[in-house]
Structures are given as C-alpha cells and as structure tokens.
Image 1: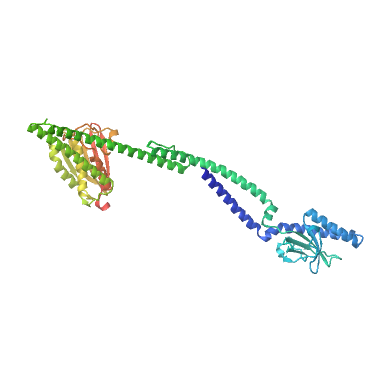
Image 2: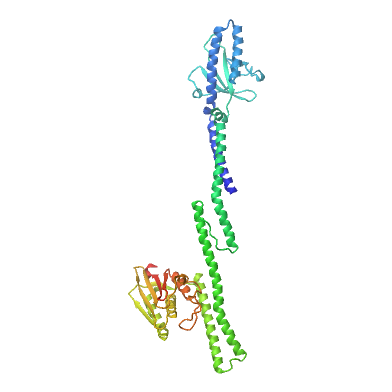
Length: 480
C-alpha cells in the first residue's frame, strides 16, 4: 500500500514538475518576459514627460527647474520602485542617478536595443534596450523623447532590473496560485491513492493470507468477490485454483487410501495361505492346490492393478503415443462382442450390438478396442443374470461417430455418477462382480483418458434400479 501511495505521489509530483518546466519555458521567452516591465516603464515615462512639461511651465528660473526636476525623478523612482537616469543625448553617458548608493554616473548606457514590436506603444519617440552595468547587473531601460526647449542634449531614462523567467509568473500571479494548486492536487492525489490502495491492497492482502494458508495445508480457502473488476477476476481465479488444489489433494488422499485398501486384501490372503503351506496346515493335496490357486489368483489381480496403474500414469503424463489410422468403430464393437459373448452367456446376460453405416474414426485401433472392451466389461460386471448389455454405433452429425454401451443393471444414484470416472472409485466397494472378482476402480478412468486422448467426449448416464448408459463420441477420420 505504501508503495502504491508513493507511486501516485511521484506521478503527481512529476506532472507538476513537467508543468513547471513548461511555464518556465514560457516565461523564458524575452517578449513575454519583458512585456509587463515594459508596460510599466511606458506608463511611468509618459507620466514623467508630462511632469517635465509641467515643471517647465511652473518653474521661475532654470535653477529652480533643475532642482524640481531632480526631486520629481527621485520621487517617481521611489514611488514606482524604478531607477531614473539623466543621460547625454549624444553618447548616453549617465550624468544623474536616483540611486546614490550604487550610482552609475559616468557610465555610458550601451546595450541591445529591443525590437519595436516588443514595445507596448507605437510612439516613434520611445526606445527600449537591455543594458548591463559594470557590476554585471542587467537592466531594462526605457526612454521617451521630450519635444521641448532645454531637452535637446539630454534624455530621461527609466530602468528596472531585467526580469528573469519567474518574473512573468509572479507578475501574472501564477506563482503562488500554482503552488497552492500543486499542493491541493498533491493532497487530493494522496487521498485518492489511499482510497485506491485500500480497495486494491485489502483484497490482495487477503489473497496473500489465503495463499499462505494453502501452503500450510489449509486448502479450503475462498475469497470474497469484492473490489475493482480486475481484483474480482483475480479472486475468482484464486477460488477456482483453491478448489482444484483441494480436489487434487483429496484425490491424492483417496488414491493412497484406495491403493492401500485394494492391495491389503490380496496381500493378506497371500500371506495367510502361504503361511498355511509353510506351517503344514494345508497338508492334503486338495488343500495345497486350493492355497496355490488362491495365491496365484490374488497375485494375478495385483499384477493387473499395477499394469493398469502404469498404463493410466503413462496416458496422463502424455508419454503414450497413439498409432493413428482410420478405424471402423462398428468393426471394433463386433470383435468385442465376439470376444466377450462366452462370458456373457456364462452369466446368462444378453450381449447385443446394433450398427448403422458410419465413416471411420481417426484413432489407435488397439486403444479404441480397449475403450470398448472396458465399457462392455463394466456393463457385464454390474448386470445380473437375465439382464442385457447393448452396444450401438451410429453417425453423430457429419463430423463424429457415436458409440453407446447400455445395460439394465442396478444403476447408481446421481451423487455416485459424478465420481464414476475417478481413479479407484467403486460404486459398492464390497460388491463382488458377476465374474466373482472385485474390480480395481481404474477401468473407467483409463477409458476417459483414452477418449480425451482421441479428442473425443464421454458421458455417463444412470438411473438407480434401471441401469447405466455410456456414450462416446469420436471425430471422423476426415475431421481430425
């Protein structure tokens, strides 16, 4: 928050600095810079000429006139805060100076005459110039010719220090107003920055706290959706990420628990029967054969589970490469039916297939065979004797082919259907399948990953007591 306040303050200060430079550049232009001073000198010189003409009419003699003239110039200089000189008309040598402390008497006024368009008057009898005295001080000098007897050899010159770049701003009253406006703007900007920093920093601080909580293992973190639009969007993304992290963490826990659970039973069985063989409990040939068969069956089950885990891990990691080619999905369905028909008949389940002419899909034949086989086996495993498992293959629009596998088994409730594709998830963990074995809960996870790997979609529908339906849609070969 403090950095945000500082950044806003620096921004406003920088803006004021740029504006100040612009005003200084404006004040540095000689014409604009000299204009107020020249206007003042023009007014003073016009009034001075009138005073001189009046003195000539009222003075009794030349001595009285000169005394009154010098006094008038001193009064004018003091009243108007200017400096007045009397200089010779021939070489502009100063012969009188109203400032005796730094008198320039004897100094010749030599300077750069200003252009006529600098002057505030069109009177041809006026003259203005820039003058630098022996001490290095710069002056603006202004004189107006007096058409009167006695002023042919001398001129009256009025002078003010040459204005600097800030003089124009001071003359126009900008300096103090600019400082006030700048301070007010800085104060307002700091207050505004504080409000903005508060509205932005508070949600970000909550977000930082929630992130630290997640790092400590508290995954159920949700942020309120408040503040600016951008902050709300970040909070929404954070909430989504937090939910995904929590779900992933829970999936990891479930994975460990499920693997432990599914391995515990066969390991226990193998240990028990092998112990029976070792300690001589199973002494008859029939008992030894039974023990060996059980050990072999449980070992085979663990082998299948490990193979499925490795297969799923390879698919999810992207290491598995598909050998793609045009594949007839109806042909795969018929091959799967032929392979699994003996098992279906053994459990008195009707296994049927219905196909319509459909274009080939673009995929890996063996992997698609695995998809269809797993779906049909899943239907057989959860359908009782006298039930039915039905496959159908048909076009789905012009760009996809649809495969459905439907059974009229026990089905499942909606809350279980949502998790059907999770690894190790089993609707009834204790239920034994129709083939007398317990499933690993990996088959449908592998099916989903393979379908996604083929850029397809899979959907599950189920109604408790009526059965389940799995629908797979795959892009045709020409639409890959």
